[in-house]
Image (cartoon, rainbow, N blue to C red; front, top):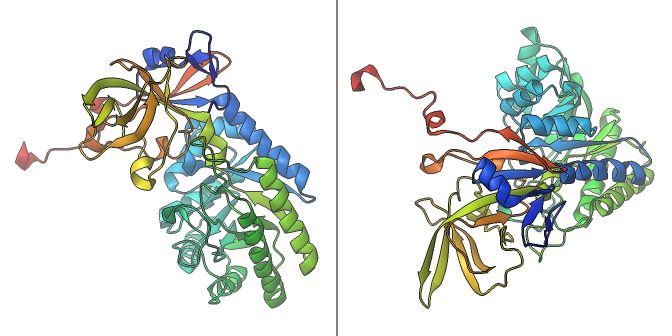
Length: 436
């Protein structure tokens, strides 16, 4: 399963962006996040072009930065003409430091602090996605304190249950996000926003889940959201200018996963909104989506170095690598599965099945029953489709430093995130005088 610009050379080396993976490991060390920038840019363009071609009204694509955010990522996304959604003050700060156009930033979060709302208002973000009534109260107090008025979308929970891991279903009725239309809370929020001096309501938002491998649910979400748009118009006179249907399109982590294409997503989503608006007598709003994983997921590869080969005769062979749970928690959190490449032995015949084990204290078995050639300490393992929710969810568990990240394109490799040092791990810690 070669993705993006990955290819195998005649001598059996895995290349990414024209650079051998083993060379990247030698130069930058491992674990190492490798971003295939050509692949990343291609996904941005496919989204922008596919939705523009499929929809008869205006469109906008916002990269969901929670999937993977760096200063370099902000620059690439900006150059490709996308908006950016952020879900914390820290992500907004990164966008600001990167020089991202803040009028194209959306501020998310199910419990935005007063400081975060203030930062969004002061920055002049494109809009804040209002998640609850309390956020309106907070914004109004901030307005009284001198912070400027800002635009808003209201997040609706449409009540759709989709086929994905339970932990990443976000659009069902039992969700911490948004307000449901059924119990009347969402309409009360519309009325409140229309009266609020702190916000200018411009539309509605929903997000139904992540790593979705079918697109019919997006059309279903569009229908339910348009029902709410129609009800809001009938009851309050408000005409939604923006309909944001969130993200969630899945990516390939293994050969068994077959997600829909970006044009397929654009076609069914655009058709659902256009036909739905015609049926309800609504003007076409600006159609927005917020892909994250499906932009960066397949562009990312995670490199490890094998340190120990442990064979238990008749039971299992373990390959212990120099990372694990702290740089990719998804196998532990979601039972996520991945393909595994042996970057310097791509043409070697497989002759065994192994378990790739991380180095953390807990049961940190990353990848089980992996077909493998003869493996030795020092071999480099490459794991594709690690662009989404790996770097973003990395930790310092067991005091392991977070890995470095590089962008590769056209044979060039650039360091975009430095590897943490042991001293970095202690930054900010203090010993009280009574313990000195």
